[in-house]
Length: 393
Image 1 (cartoon, one colour):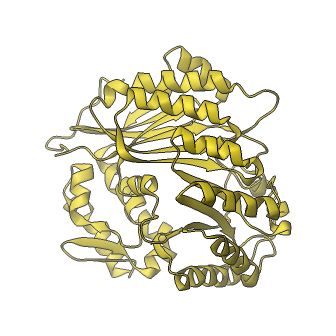
Image 2 (spheres, helix red, strand yellow; image 1 turned 180 degrees about the vertical axis):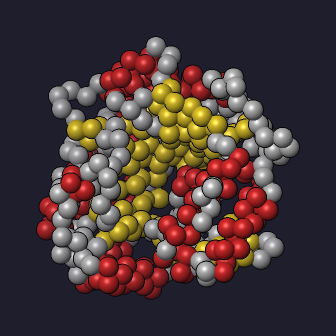
Image 3 (cartoon, helix red, strand yellow; image 1 turned 180 degrees about the horizontal axis):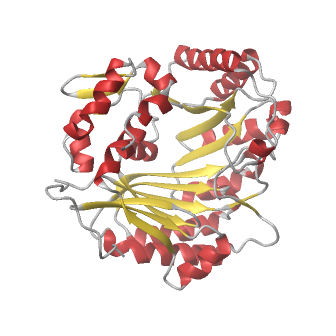
């Protein structure tokens, strides 16, 4: 429900609504990784697969009045470890989505998968259910690195999962981490080379960071120092570029035609429904933009969703926050965005962020003309410094 006391700023109105995506959160995993700050919960005992899908369907139905008539272009099933779920549960879930939302004929439907859950027949079942893109959380193909990261799979399982995924799906993302405890540039490059050798066409390469409320934050491992981490990053990026990958987002590399369309919708400030435990959503109406958050704890979410009350929080994005929220996403893109997109997605003129744009340009973090704005190489390297310029006073 839209807050009744929400008033749109005078004169701010979207000429058209942005593309719409659907994010579905499946919160259970085999074991909580020590670096993970997502809303994930170790599966202890029997996971209530059927009841959780029932809750997701009820949750989706509750948000339908806010998106009547809008077509969904991408679906992303994330977690947790969605590949823990039986293929039949994913099929029932996607059937329910199709019955309630108009999916684009070429909709990208992504499912996150853990190599430790890989079974060829199960993954074939995901494909038959309508999943057409798999994101495989490998992180590393090195045994010592996997142990340090607390992963449940070994190198052989990682290679088998990627090879099996590529045999079943045209679009596969391989997640890798670098700057791991004790890692050298050569070891990081070995991970990249293994992914390339298996035939990956999309690689997400992230530097390991110590996030608050994680085991690693409380018990930090010995990570490479800043200079070594930078050398590792440069080596990884160079190796992917040599292999023909385009870096299109700060941590995403792809062959032409293999970019992640769901994530691109986030980064261009598109809309997305978020259902599932702890899921976040962002939706637009012609005169306002608002965010939603679902109940975080899985059992609390199930009970609340089935009672028609999955929503934990909802609030309008204030006009003074819109510039920061747009830039927080858009400036992750290596090629930036058209200037006109700012007004199209926020309802504000670009003069609303004129001062921080000028400051970013003066510091060499951003380049722009009257048609386009993009982060510089320095801006990508110091992205937090760049986007912080757009924080409201």
